[in-house]
Amino acid sequence: MDLATELAQFNLRTVTPEALAAQVSVWAEQARQLQQQADLVAKQRHEIQFKDTKIAALTLELAYHKRIKFSSTSEAFTAQQRDLFDETQETDLNAMQAELEQLAPAPRAKTKPTGRKPLPADLPRIEHRHEPESCTCGCCGQALFRIGEDITEQLDVEPARFFVQRHIRPQYACRLCETITAAAIPASIIDGGLATPALHAWVVIQKYLDHLPLYRIEQISTRHGVAISRSTLAEWIGRIGVALQPLAERLAELLKQRSVLHADETPVPQLDPGKGKTKRAYLWAYRSNNLESGSPIVVFEFQPGRSGSHVQTFLADWQGHLMVDDYAGYKHLFKQGITELACMTHARRKFFDLYAANKHPVAEEAMQRIAELYQLEREATDYSIEARQRWRVDHAKPRLDAMHLWLLQVRKTSAEGGALSRAIDYSLKRWPAFIRYANSGHLPIDNNPIENAIRPIAVGKKNWLFAGSERAGKRAAAIQTLLATAKANGIEPFAWLKDTLEKLPACPNSRLDDLLPLRT
Image (cartoon, rainbow, N blue to C red; front, side, top):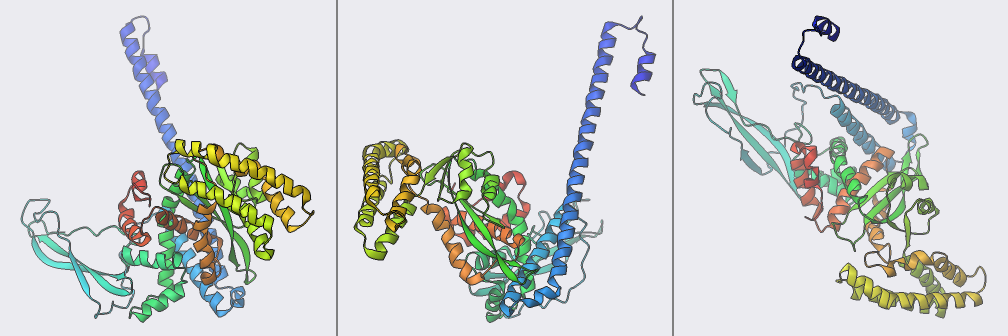
């Protein structure tokens, strides 16, 4: 019955105020329920539209990658480039397939045997027996009797030692109900996969921490008597990257809750399949401040260029102190309320280069003055923020004031355009940003923490040569974020990743913070 019909049935001359009030309350509740239903329908429509758009974009990207993989332009690479290009393509394709499955899950059909080679019989077996919680029938209460068992074998690894984890799940049946009961299969990153979380973690560590391309990991496993194809390794990396992405995104959210950050960037060659050569991309790095409370966090972000718009997008709506070098891409941030901090190590580096070239006495004195500032920082390592602030104001600030006057005097007598004048101008131009730390107890003196986080990436580039695609670069940045944060927190990366991959499939989004590689 609609509202108009209900109103027509009401005789306002005879109805009591109480009955009218009760009916109005009923109508209000009906209106509220209708509004809730309308809001739910609108929300579901928005979610469906978002998923449809995302699925269409992923489907298009998937088709593009498949076309590139088999196009003639891919034949222009050298043998080594071709190997790396192929493994990147396999990883990207499997990552996109995993994302599509997340957006549009379909019932998993019972798969036919794929003809996969059995695991080597000479590998040691560690058996795990999974018994049902109860050996009585859940329907009628009768005792179950054993009719067989389901055996699943997964390949596991300790460094340089492969072995097989055998999971035995006895199956019990009820004669009366004709039902079968067995322990549930533990959740996994890759359903029905060959590998355990430990093997997945080992492959990820080999690729992203030890910087080994997949073809080298394939060679290592083959040497130990287990042939794991590159296509299989690529599938693992792609799907693991998708599974770990929410953890990396959460670390980025937590990082931007800090008030002081370090930032830097390093070039990374990226393969350009259409041209058969590489182009320059960039890995942007951000780190929390060691002098503040809280676990250290390192976040990497892969971008196709060095434009300042990338850091502006990442730090949108963030306010605080930012420690950076003199790259112009950061300058726009300092017009939007972010406070600039300059790295004393960069200032010293200018004078060090001059001293290394010709033992210049002015450069030597500048380095000595900066060394005194660092000695003060070492002496205040264990101080509280308040005590460090008093120490800096009493000891560092006078030395900085004296150094500033000395630099101004020396600059008056130095030749224009010379190496000495350029070194001095670098410091004088950013002097307020260089000395800002001395009035505080929590601001850093240099950008060394982020440079130390980037250094393994720079070393690794000599091994893996380039990022195979933008998607591969973003996946590497997410995984490097987690591994670098684990190392910064004194957590062994392999142990953390193995434990995380075991727990992640059954972990609700509300508990993701429990899996982050942070000190508790």
